[in-house]
Image (cartoon, rainbow, N blue to C red):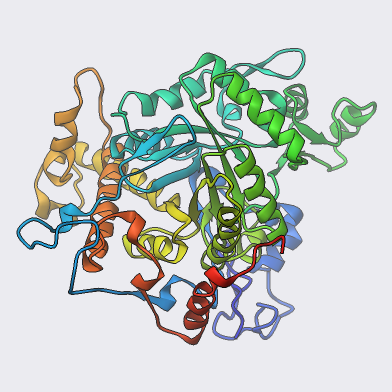
Length: 516
């Protein structure tokens, strides 16, 4: 049985002619007809070529892996206990689910306090306004995605290709700042292109941004973006702004060849990170000198030695948090096959990272906080991820789930305003502030007459509220009332693979250090 998806997917809006009769190895129909007009990925590729390597309609959609991984968090159940209380009074009159503390903090000198161990990964599309605002209301961290400045129609660069005007960043940051209450933070992510054009430098000088995340990659997109450019003017504009465009529109004869209608088009390529310890150390120092209180890393499940090297660089440079993104999660715009067929699955990546972190701790080095992301959407997986990641992986990244909540809240709020309340919601009331359970609470905290609150932001707040409450329920079930007490004993292996996984974890203390 193949674990990979077949050659039909909503990624590319393709279908198989005989979906009930397929070749397991190739993913094709078992009988390929000479009368077929090509409904599948092969047929579409015959029409559109390299364009089909990426999903369609990426501006309005998010995507996630369709591959069926043979081992994941579902191979574990959550444990429970009936005696004792760790981290709270052993007293039924005092201790209950509200005694569970899921707050935490990260940072080397300048600490960031969080109401929940959650970071919302990089986003710069769809309903980003409510994504950032809802995160502030919930008191968690949220990341402005790579290449955010390119979304600004008023973007300007100087003669050296450096960003000098990108007011959209100010609007994004303000979405968070106007609702923050001393918890969480909004983070600006930079990729290799952002570093070349000086996005972080511009933002640190002009806006209230204090945390920068350097992106090595994510588990759905291990290289930077590749995008067709169909206009000569756009190709020139991108090149003038410091981005890589092939062929170079400035080269002699390229414009003439393009305008002759010979069929080629330009391609914009995101720069690959070509960094080393020295380059990263200098970059981190520069950002700190410009006012960054904390530096974060975003890392995917690359080769294990690359993972180790990134952890060592983070430790040496006092990086506050590394978010490791495992396969199976989501993305806004990644190659279809890369999304499905590369990187370590999240649960395996956790073990790799945890063992390496154990080596770092044994050597007495600075230990950055670690978040794990990749397919985590509800409190059960959140609890399992933190339990299996203990003691070093103590946060989770939740991207697509959080954006889904922000979009759902916004859409439902708009329907209610139009008098088109979904029938399934009428049981909760006949007005938005009644249907949205947390609306009145949120509006009691903020002065709404000066600071309008979107139901999308309330939707995200309520979603994180639900995850937080569910997390506390599982902690109470295990009689552990602080995050630091959660460990591998709080999950139950259901399969042979899960038992072997936990067996490896129990060897952690006996593992030799990497150097030995």
